[in-house]
Image (cartoon, rainbow, N blue to C red; front, side, top):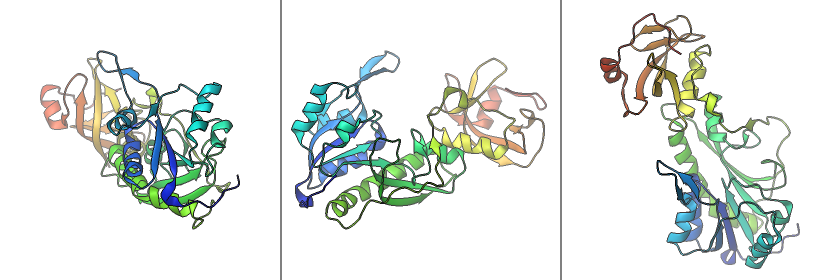
Length: 314
């Protein structure tokens, strides 16, 4: 793509995003000197007890700011491409959009499509980089600003910003930190790229890992794993979808917080209140949420739901 010089004060931007993670970066764009011409987000989905159709967080932010919002299911139809061409954006900014962009879309803006990705590429390409980085016990992650191509997060990188992972906190804390970092660095990265102060750097072919989507069966704890592995999963999957074990009444007990313990026993064996044996060492449960109940400390939970030492839990 041949890029012509253009004043960064006059950029026409189209934004594509869907979840809460994308709110802060979009708000920075709205507050900047750039012009957000339109916002693309996924269509309203049924959710909640009443299965009512709800807008995405980005959809609601677009409406609040009186910005045109578009919700195509995909980009297979010519009229959808035509609409984007009529908008004539200088750059498209993508943040956790959740819909694949075809080559026809990628080549429309003069400065390409800039993707905000929540890892230091090429580590953790894919759908769930925040959770996968924590499940792996990584010590740091970060934000990559990448120019999109037809591959899965394979495009050239403009900027990386590292953030340490603090396992005192859960994935929501890391999610919010990464969103803030993306927002704080977005405008400067766009301006430097457009003005030629930074250039795109192809990703290395070493250190590539993939952050596949979190599956439902990963939520149920496998006590044959090491206590450290289970601890990382508890942190990574909190608050969503959460990790759990099953009580003797066949009720799910969601674990909200825990710590590694040095006691040893059989996998799933209750060693103390509430210390559970793992494939290596054990895990001391600190906070739980019973199925249909509220969050509470493990001591409060055990007062009404005693679990005998020596029993095996699933």
